[in-house]
Picture 1 (spheres, one colour):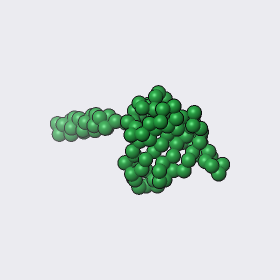
Picture 2 (spheres, helix red, strand yellow):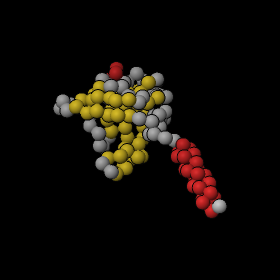
Picture 3 (cartoon, rainbow, N blue to C red):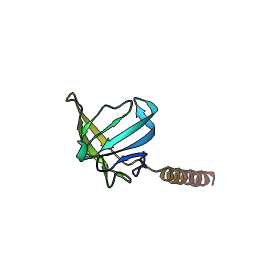
Picture 4 (tube, one colour):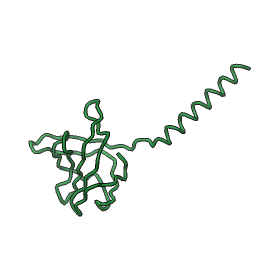
Length: 117
């Protein structure tokens, strides 16, 4: 999911929802809707299908219509009192992977040229 998602549902000062076509559940990517709540609505998140209501930290900053997701370690509790920890990090953009791959390819070509001489 993007650090700056485009919500399809917004409830000002309380929550927003985004489509997540690549939510990883176990080892499988599934389609789901993720709802994020700010501290005015007990914070936390849930999904329509796979993740229960989790209460705790607010995972975004800025207005609900144009949020920016936060990174770090977040702690949540569900309705039965079970505790969860969520570690959120930035994933490299596709251009970063392309730059790395092209750099490695250039190094490999240079090595092959040196070995051929």
